[in-house]
Image (cartoon, rainbow, N blue to C red):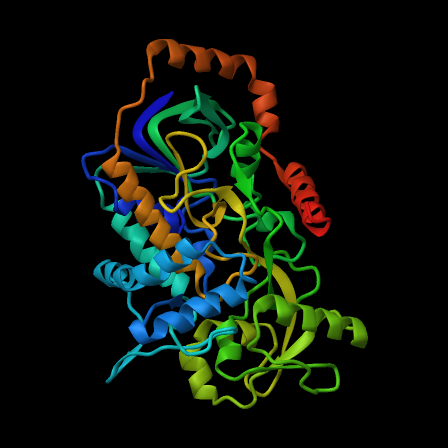
Amino acid sequence: MKKADILIVGTGVSGLFCALNLPEDKNILMITKDICENSDSFLAQGGICVLKDEKDYESYYNDTMKAGHYENRKESVDIMIRSSPEIISDLIGFGVEFEKDENGFIYTREGAHSTPRILFHEDITGEEITSKLLAAVRKKPNVTILEFNTMIDLIVENGECLGITVKDENGRLYNIFADNTVIATGGVGGLYVHTTNYRHLTGDALGVCMEHGIELENIDYVQIHPTSFYMANHDRRFLISESVRGEGAVLLDKNGDRFTDELQPRDVVTAAIRKQMEKDGTPHVWLSLKNMDEEMIKKHFPHIYEYCREHGVNLPEDSIPVVPAQHYFMGGVHVDSDSKTSCGRLYAVGEASCNGVHGKNRLASNSLLESLVFAKRAAAHIAQNYKKSNITENIIEKYEKQLCEKRDRLLLRDDYVSVMRANIEKAKEEHLNGK
């Protein structure tokens, strides 16, 4: 049994940024299912959106709403966009570096953006941001990180979350009690055959919340990225950033002909690729960078360039074999604009949460920004409303006793793959039937 003032489940960008914005006089415990570096935040390539100036607001807002099929929560979209300059300033304060020239920031463009507004660091923006935040967290004396510890249950008493039950790397079960708990467990990519996500991201937190009747939202809203590197019998797909298409790369069929507008929203481009694959009878299509300068590719997309070379694709002469793959989860644990869930003392941030920013389809490069904005709001709300929970010796004794009694059932909860697959399919069917 452990105790903390604030418990954060997950060490991706949202969990880390939440920890960095919490009061330093609070004892913060973070747990993660794998090593800290194996979070999808490290894998983000393209960049992070920012409101360049007030003149860009209407365009940015409309781009986000249109990409989300106008199912976005308007308040959340407004909060995210208006908070973006402050977030970028915070990141720079933590040592994050974005590409610049003599005139200042360089902005790139991705699909469904009407203008370039995306800051980036080569083609590893997620790694640049997350690694700097992780380094800052590791320096904080009030934060402890436990790797290879998996949440398998919530401790909920009278409508309030008082902590979680955990399985450590040796299979031992124990409870962590906390005054506030933040879910930052990422997405559901491990449920899919083709995914750009780490395999251990299987939506465990959603399964746990379901069992406790905590409200979820749009769990069938799963985004497929149009362009991942195709290799037969490969586990996790390597992402070919949307920025590559934003900089001019084009999609080709088996005859070498262009067949769609590459800068449409991701779901539209994905549908076009799947239709072309079916028509051509091929397991992938091709992405051509032949109209791009090799030095520019090596400078802007060095890791994509090297990965392709390592796998026999010599850019820009050769085209990249690409296939759609599961990439992002727009649904999740329902939260308000302060990242509060329907359960007291429980917050959710990042890809595990649903604050409505993305609607039915995420606009490219909004994910890092959304995660950071609402993680910071969660931290602010916790700090402003902090109250010790009523974790009595009787409550501790009760849940320690239950731990022993329910050991076998709790260990089975470690794998929510079948549960989450079934519930995502059920939600999809209900949406199709208009329920």
